[in-house]
Image (tube, rainbow, N blue to C red; front, side, top):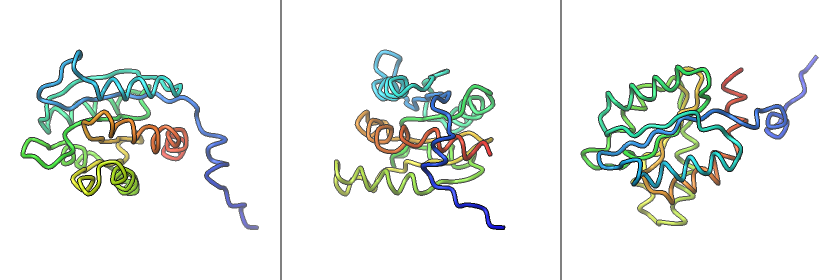
Length: 172
């Protein structure tokens, strides 16, 4: 007997509507007062009904980034870690490599879609972004650029519409 094929809409119908998120700003210069991207991420998550269970600002040092993300993923109340900053190509941008080392699974479609949508706003400069998504310890880990506009685009167009579905699938 064959099993019925389920659809993304059916998955979403049984997905959580609110998830716990940890927001990490990666910057050598940002402070709680100047962290506009982290604020955009936290505000959009909260407005969408998700819980921001913690946040941090960490220097763009790979060991520090890995430690903060690893610790957040060890928290049972955290379903997703969203980082902002450090995804470019300057000599100090090391977030991609730090996060990449932690990932058990990669979801390359996120980066592809993000750059496609970014292209509509910033043109060919979108190719400089190393935004990525993957799984660490059955938690969603997302690396976003440090631009508030890039964070808004990623959350509104990609993450918020799929977070419940992502968490449902990674929890299975």
